[in-house]
Length: 456
Image (cartoon, rainbow, N blue to C red; front, side, top):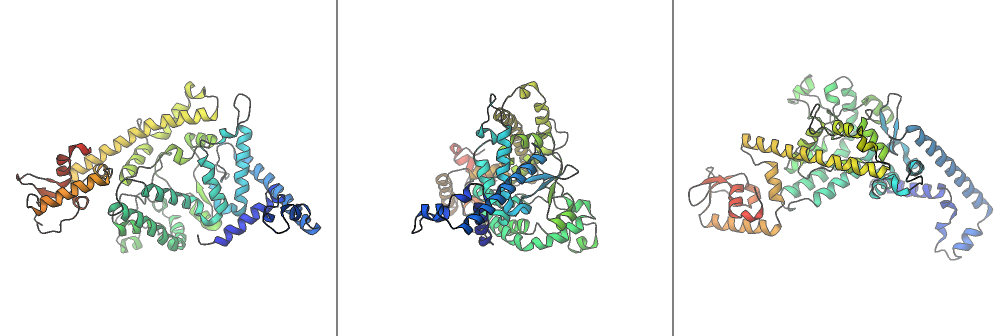
């Protein structure tokens, strides 16, 4: 946290200007004279100061509510629209005003609820977790750079709790992500060059995909740490000088068709606005229902499976797995329109999306298996199955593998017989020869020797 004093000052500002709460005298709890003496018998100048702060707080709350009303039902608490229908993320702009915007959104959505003619606070969000996340971002202000910080925390928790041991690819991934994010904070000033250059080169305006399945620590650091650097490609002298063969792979969102492109990079540098394109029907309905990205789509722990899944979900004209097009059709049906409450609509939409996402994920796995057969490399699907094995199962296989190697009943079949005998995970795709003379990848040997483990 680079600016802890900012957090403390913002919390103090919020408390002093929050309507009613600022008059409760919470700062007087524990004082010698007691809460009552300090709060109920405060000097006149202190009372006038508190009254002025409370009046300002009421004014800010009223302004926030009116501003929230102007954005419409499909906007989230931190968004506002420009005159072209693009959505601007206002978290970096609001600063100490952000908590008032969040409170205004809660009040706005509460006033819109209708459960048999009555208002219901539980209707405003899918789960209580939604507003806990939002409150943390609103209270922390600029410490989380336009939503990025919370995403990084979510990814870290997901990586730590995912399949695999810390020694190996999982540990390299977590460490690489951590170091890469730190490196990226020092390269952010170079984003000025990136945004200015992309004005003249449309292909450089695409948002790059930074999670493409790397397992090497240094590859992960390079991919995550230097994502703010300009994407020159081969269209100019600079790109060719640095050996660029092609532009970075654009990222895709499961909620939109096509690749993700930055909107008006010049305006971003001048005013700090991060713009997103006008919402499609699915995104508008998600805004209406206050459904978040992570409610609709959870990333797969394997980055390659996740990448191919998102590509299937966003591929134009894909009638089986294009998520936003299929859900748009579903939202037009009488079945969906018959849902009376927001929670009923949320549940129906999420259940429908599960089937589409599951099909897209299975198709992604099949695509990766086909690529594996062509290249001869171990597929991410099989690597994921290996990582799901328990530590005991892996240890048992490793012990058996090392014993047979030392006894001479197993040997490397690629001409490098004197290589160090490492654990199985280091050599899963390496060819070995068993005592019968059969040559097969080490993964296949593990599957044949322990069929009860569930490797396929």
